Figure 1: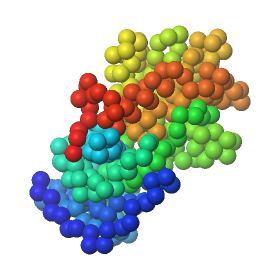
Figure 2: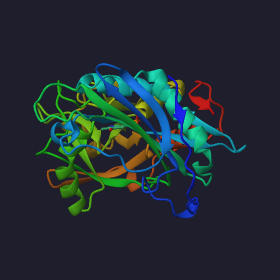
Figure 3: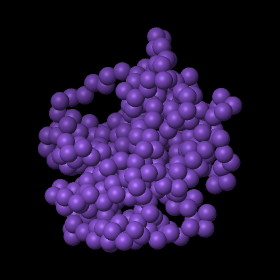
Figure 4: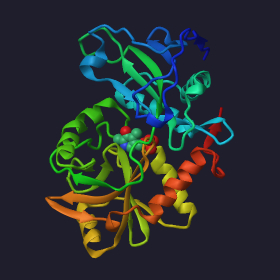
Length: 351
Ligand SMILES: *Cc1c(COP(=O)(O)O)cnc(C)c1O
């Protein structure tokens, strides 16, 4: 892959690191590539960040063929910049493309493109505690044709956004969703696609109206087994063991989830990847066996859950305090990501 670089001749002023939100400001450049059946993926380029022009007939607007990724670049104490497991994102993006019928972009090329882009915009990687450069690769169909005929033209774009802390370590209140489902087995739950988010909007709005931060999703078939929390994977500490829903096809295989499992096992704590019913969770909460709960994902890293509401009843977890294991995971993961702790697993890639 040969990447052509067209530099931004009027680079923007860097934002105040103390006032960074999430995904609101974008860097000077973006990566773009095009696909069509005749040429495959081609015209790899890094260009000034700006609007993209699409036909109103572009298939993405009508039939929703879109997939995305999310990863971060971190500023290390010595002033360097590093990525966390970027190949995992590259591989997952290729798998998501495959599920949606979009021609896959090779994982190595995603990593290369991210590296080149972040190198060029490295002054945008903030250094303040808890901040990072959020990287958003996304692929969508651009066929100018309203008939349904597969994806024959597509575009791949990567944008970067200096970002602050997403949730923080204060436990949040969540609500069990019993009406809507996010995804079903055989559907697109395990692909990171925009459509899954569209399916989640209504429940998320309802939960927010009632004062909850996130929705806890149940499986779409039996409405019985716990799947994810908001747009994060979810873990519970029950009777000294960690339990997390197994990947059945409707759950997004999170890289933070995978890293948490590897870390927890390396600490000699048992992790069970299995079906966990809402009845078992309620019972564990009532008996006191439920010690901790947290969501995990790239944006928030670890987001402790302090309370969940099911069928109108509130269940408090760990007195609404951040649990010991949640805190340990957060410290270890961020320690590795920011290059402040040793990286025995070889997860980080220095630029
Ligand atoms: C991205 C995402 C996650 C978390 O994945 P990470 O690789 O850990 O960031 C979990 N659930 C959903 C639905 C997601 O889109």
